[in-house]
Length: 469
Image (cartoon, rainbow, N blue to C red; front, side, top):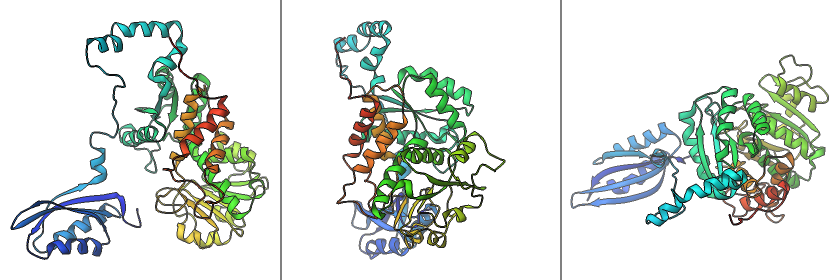
């Protein structure tokens, strides 16, 4: 739930007021007295007796939006005609579409774009399948694949409910990296079926972005697809998060004057994101890490360890700490949370080392209230847009895939992920770096291009150009 009015709960109220009374001046006051924020007030129709007005305002949540409407309705002379939720309006009919890149103005155009001319191109690809990357959308296309089992913070809501999120992901691919991405929502949560379906559709794509598939199944899906396919397979919930966390932590440690190999890190969350973050932190040089899940610290003596938790136990917590998260946080230099809301308090953060770094990334409600954390930590980051230092995967995946597609890469390596994180961190200049600016804005113009260049170089070179058929 938002603590302040947010555009994500923005409404437009169409109403009528008497033309000569005080109602118009009372509209803004009514919204503000209800705790909302007026963002626009438009007179859409005027007459001698009545005015029709659209009042657009931001609320905290749906109940708060209704309270604002009730406050407006209580003004003498006001008649409410229609209330529109602007977020739902944006989603009407979906958020993406397909457009032709070539003109179809006449019979000549049709003969080249389709039959009979297209047959020549098809036969060329049949003779040399690698030409599909050059002569089809495969060159610039990514499949965004989900089974709807772990959508945002909403849980297992299924493929149809996941579609708006996948559409949004596709829109971000296009906006930030000019990549054509296609939502693929699968009505199965069986690992064998997911792998089989993605393998079958892979010829039409230059890369696969796995999205919102729950752990531990996501690990097996990714592993098997990487073994089967000759195109990159990237699980954004894992690797996108890991890239952003490492980049932000690199800069946060610069702010407080500490080095990654020297700091003690307490982590909350051992699922897909947590495991990927851990792996990349270790690859980057972290040495002293304790990971906690809902049962407490992961250690070699625990009897409930599956394959993933066993790997964590083998590579972390060398001293065998077996207590809870609060104990793990005590004395730690860094806390990284990718778990659940409200599991720590400001008092817990106060027990950390001096100049502590706190990444409370559970969304929309962090593991610890950011204001409480900031009272005791030197640097605080969250997944939210209403606080400084937002850790947002859109900083990573568009540039990563731009680099992979340009290099015509056949996979994703750890070195590519590290290169992406280093490049993302370097976007923040020494002059800009500070406790409230450790990671660039998602709208920073250099982010995608810089990350893409780093990934392309790590993949083995610069983009391959077109050649004549």
